[in-house]
Length: 80
Figure 1: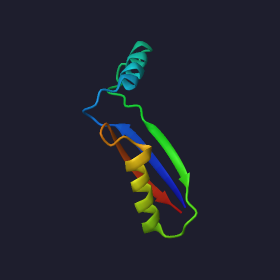
Figure 2: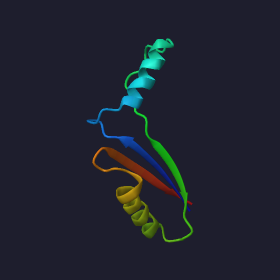
Figure 3: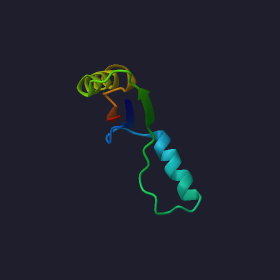
Figure 4: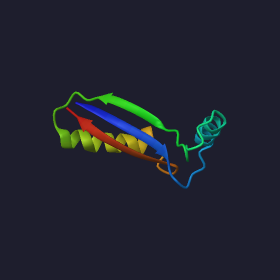
């Protein structure tokens, strides 16, 4: 199995990296680009076969280690 995880800043949190990308795109002529949010993407190979256990462990890892729940949101899916 594989976990695919996306971590992004919360909507209420200032995202200076996203703002920089947005400004760069505007200067390059991409005027129709709105807000940009820069985050992290992780893929984790899982060796177990219990999907519910995998989901619980990935959720716990995201909350405790992989993200900062004060300023970041995360979502994930389990494949395989």
